[in-house]
Length: 106
Length: 173
Image 1 (cartoon, rainbow over the protein chains, first blue to last red):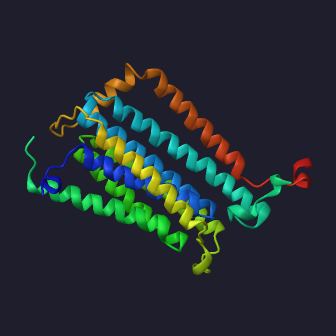
Image 2 (cartoon, rainbow over the protein chains, first blue to last red):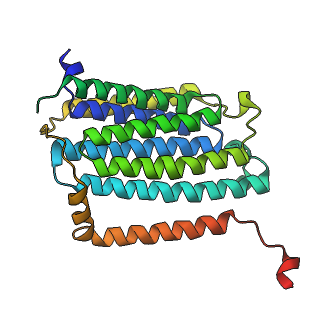
């Protein structure tokens, strides 16, 4: 009962760990390129949540939030670049199932 | 810090929202449902940021992720996926292997989190936007400028990658 009513660091770490697990599952199992990108977004969000939680409960100061801003910034640019690549791959291959794009294997 | 029942209830509501929609993202058979469920995850995390006294980050999370990234992903899905074919638009492979890997990773994370004694102090949730602004314009000046260059580079790169190649015939005229 104490665990349920006394919210501490471990609760936010648990949420981030489960998010990370779902993101990893998404990346491993998805065959759709955008699906893989969704998994990457989940993992980045889990990492950002960990930064903010540690800053609030352990470190103090503001550094954790600064790095979370950088994570959000990089995630946005990564999504823009990745989706541009996905669009271009779809134009040339007519598919974005990651297994079927294997030109560079030969 | 004394936590009111409202704080505890809101944490568990946000927890369920975040984890539940992350589960839909990872497990749904339809890529459109996965993308829209990502909205719940982003909003849940924005709520958790407010609880962790990161009010500016919560606003940025909603503006950038929900307003920008999610819209972009939805456009990409609609331009590329064969959405009408719901059963196969988001197929899986290697579920059992993935499950074993995830359980292994979560086991290690749980062991580390339990065996480490964090010097955790419960603080009051305070607005932190002013402190964040001061940090960006003094201590983190250089990373801040580099991040803006990265954003500019990503923007130009995305435009160059996504445009159609100009036909050589019209180019000569």
